[in-house]
Image 1: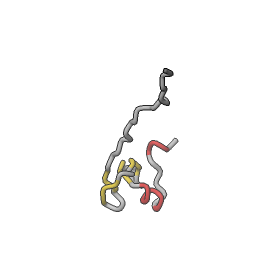
Image 2: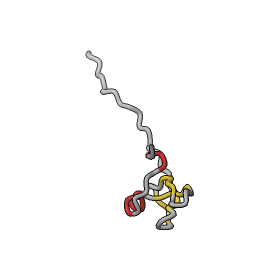
Image 3: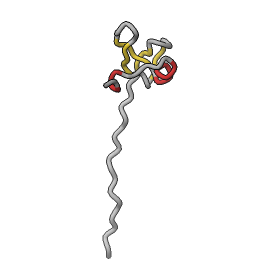
Image 4: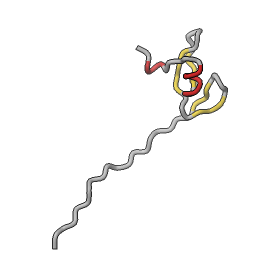
Length: 62
């Protein structure tokens, strides 16, 4: 009797979810990333606020 083979499956790795405080709209968000404000302070901003206020995440800056 031939042996059945199953396709290789990669183990499911859960995505890491981080919830941070968006300093612009003052609420929690799971898309908040660190940015610098006009004074140079490091704060967190969600994706909507980053788009609205043209904020670039610190990790994406050259």
